[in-house]
Image 1 (cartoon, rainbow, N blue to C red):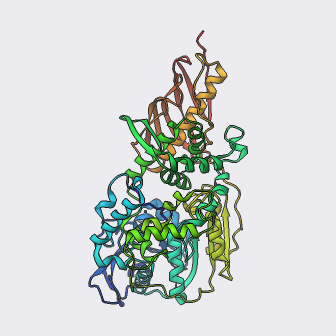
Image 2 (image 1 turned 90 degrees about the vertical axis):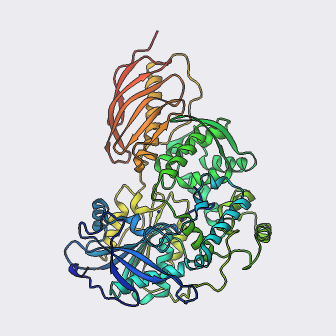
Image 3 (image 1 turned 60 degrees about the horizontal axis):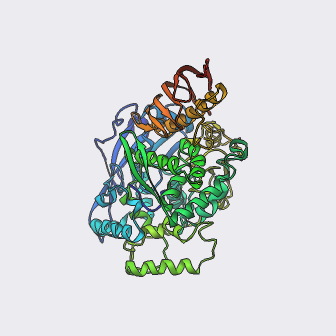
Length: 608
């Protein structure tokens, strides 16, 4: 599930391929894993418009990984989120590590993932105007104009990328594989697509595994549930046991700061790897950053102190964090296809305007709907938070007239397991509970300390074991133990240091500096962006690599710097590193410390 506004995701093996209403062909693919380790790739060709009104077809890129041995239990479709993530690319079954992970989760099951229409290798939609940087900084009316231009460039084809169309694609792939009943594992928006398929083709569904659940009638156009649930969820990010008196109210800091930024955005110059960069942070951008914390443990560790510092008049930590997050996002190749996101979201949504209404009149309708709504519609946030919902995103998108719509049947009475992370900001646990209530054999598993996309974010193994047991017919638990953070929450940033630090203070600040560096590594190199260079808050740089990082004069406060190479040694949580560090700076003498088992050891000589 993405947030608005859109910113700059077999015959030999025992499955017989029988052409059905969809054409099936083996084909070369951009996936480097096709043909390796048993992975079979093919194209299933489907009509663009199944009513025949608009000519054209789409070749769906499908990847199938047969079960690796033992009893054959069935076929499970892996459905990614967004909308806009290409499922075959997102799950990447050609990667031996991914194949092993999902093979362990679903033993005996044949795995199927295909790029949804409009994504990856399935006729990707492209709107160049959406790929420009800093789109999220635009006022609503300007972004609406860009979205409208995207819709015009796509032409009539834009009306055939709704969830109903994707349901029919999923059915075409099922028929092409000649499988009667399938299991579906959906993540985020993928759960909505899985549920939509279950309502349309209940007789072909064997079981549903729903991770970070989006109900059929969500998201609503104003992001009401997400905004209302945010304060309580944020409180779990920084409990008193970890933040104490230094950061007493992270949730309150976020709410107050966001509403303040709506009136006066932050401006400032921040350090970058190549010099200094002038940046601006508005309210919607800030909330986008906060929402991202449920997928980025490093960001979650840094945000409480950064938000508190900004609220107290020191914007540098927050501006640096936002700039790093933006650079990471810009360099990512596994994000959301913006054009497809718009085409699906704006097709499916229920908005407070009629088809054919002008953009200006839609804006008026939005404001009228907001004025008529209760004060709690946007949670504790002001009217500016309207920009977070899909209504603001789609205000410039032509509304579909007579497009395909879902024709739901009763949901099938099949086993259903829903997973919800206690730190999930974008798909609240209440959504999962509301869906599970509709299934007589539905079960909900909540995992505290984990954010969005539970199975791939839970380091404890609890949710994975639960899924493994459930897939074999055993009873999973209702709740997992709380998961510790990967890195400690950063306490309040120091603003100034004495001329000389004593030994205890030197080690304490060195440890805090190291924790900050670990969190930044987790946000950068730890997320796969190897080679990324991040600035220290008060000096120096961090060179991030997949299993290590190098500090060069890295500082979070003037007067003490760290240099050295730290090697990743322990998955955790907490994650562990080992290495040698040089402590320098005007407030500390030049010394060497050794990091072992999370502790800095060595001798500190304080300058006299």
